[in-house]
Structures are given as C-alpha cells and as structure tokens.
Length: 341
Image (cartoon, rainbow, N blue to C red; front, side, top):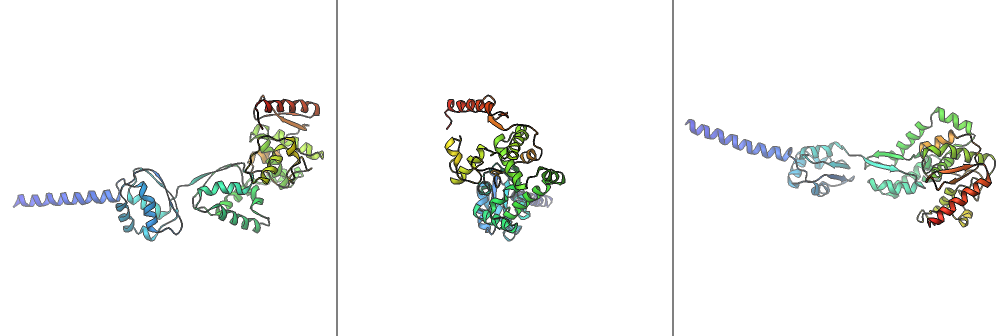
C-alpha cells in the first residue's frame, strides 16, 4: 500500500515537473533565434506581427500561444522593438504591449536643404518622405513661412534619437524646443549688437560652416572676414554659395568638387559672386558653433582667404590683394597637380 502511494506521489511529481518545465519553457525560456528589430506599423494585424517576428524566434507557435493568452492580439502597439538573445515569450509580449520601443539614431548633417534631410531621416521612420514634407510644409505655413525649406534654421547638425513611429510634428517640435533654448537672452543681446537679422546670421553661419569644413578653430576668423567684406559693401564671393546655386539647379544630383570661373555667374540670389550682400537664407543646415562664430566674430582686418594646400582643410588669410593672388595661384596649381576638376 505504501509502495503504491509512493509511486503515485512520484508520478504526480514527474507529471507536475513535466508540465511545470513546459510552462516555464513556453512562457519564460529563451525563444530568440537571433537578435534584430521588429517593426510593427500602425494598424498592423496580429498575423502580420507573427509573420514579422518569425525570423527572430525559435518557436512561432509558442509565442503565438503566449501572445493570445496575454491578449496581445487585442492591444498591439506600433513601434520598433529590439529582439534580444535570451528573451522569453512573456517578456517579448510584455515589451510590445507596453510599447517599449528602441530608439533610432539620426545624424543631421550639413544638408543643403530640408528635403535632403527629410529623405535621409525618413529611412528610419514609419512614414515616407512625402508625408514628412507635406506636414513640414503645413508647419511652415502655420509659422508664416512659404515652405518647409524656410524651417532650415531650426535644425542643428548633431546626432539625435527618435522613435521609428515619430510624427513630423513630434520631430519638428524637438528641434523647435532646441532652437528656442539656444536663443537665450545672451545670444539675443549679441544678435542685437551685430546689426544683423537672424536670417542673415544663419546665412553667414552656413557660409562659415562650409568654408571651415566644420572645423571650430577657424570659424570666428572666417566670420570676421566675411563681416568685413559685408560692412565694406564688397561682394562676399564665397565659393560654397556658388556650389549651392549650382546644386539647386541640379536638385543636388551633380556634386561640384571645384569652382571654375565659368560657374561664378550662375544666376541665383544665393550666388555671392553675382550679388552683393548676404544671401536670403542659409545654404546648409548649420551647427551651433558656426552661429556662435558669427555672434562672436573675430575682430580682424582680413578681406581674403584661400585654401592652404600645405594644411588640408585650413586657409591662408590676408588683407592684401597681392598676397591673396599668390596664395590663390598656389592653390590652383595644387588642384591641377591632383587633377581635381
């Protein structure tokens, strides 16, 4: 009798252990085959989610069972989810139900226009570039601007994090907040002292950024030089503005590596060889350093600058036309020796 009872108890323990192990494996055991990112669009069906997650998990049926048990099919949340090794079905389901997305990294560079930027950014978002542009145009109109391109000054070169599901409004709001924070009372005071409008400051900052190649150590010197030219009533004669004018004509499809004399007459209000004064807007997205360089420009007497072939990325500055001619010839000879066209 005792032996029978013992056998029954052992059987119960074995059966309980079997089902307990099965339960643990199904709900909490590792079910990830490989790491990756699961994208769930808005209005996705439960079947779409199952099909999308299948390549990353070992057992689709066990995931589906746990997902249904936890009502995931009734509470899907759009997003980009990081599927990590060692994760069980319960944690996978809870992550999606809670909407715990993994952020995407966005690099905002010195894009020539907002549309270029949008084209790059939307490769990491749920929405396509057309939707972003249309919404940006609406935002611009609400702010009294003509188009999304007029929003260029709100963006700064840097690396940012956003969710895959970010909307155009959410995206812009983050940059608008940064823009408003940047323009504190100290910078606004320097803006008043400069005698320039904010649009002129950004236009000059974009020239400074392009001429410096983003190198902070020359920015204030370059800003001082262009302010000297502007205040003397001289043409700014900045090569990057010619490149920008030509890029607009080709819709940024034919990059220019070298500015030839024939390009200098390119018709455009941005071409500072063809027009006096500061361009009507920035020729690229700028960084904070270039704006600060204009607000804190170096007090110098430089009028001319030329790329220095002996120090790649840097320039030779002078107030002498004769000395500049020598510097310019040395640079042209270097370009010819490198067959840069």
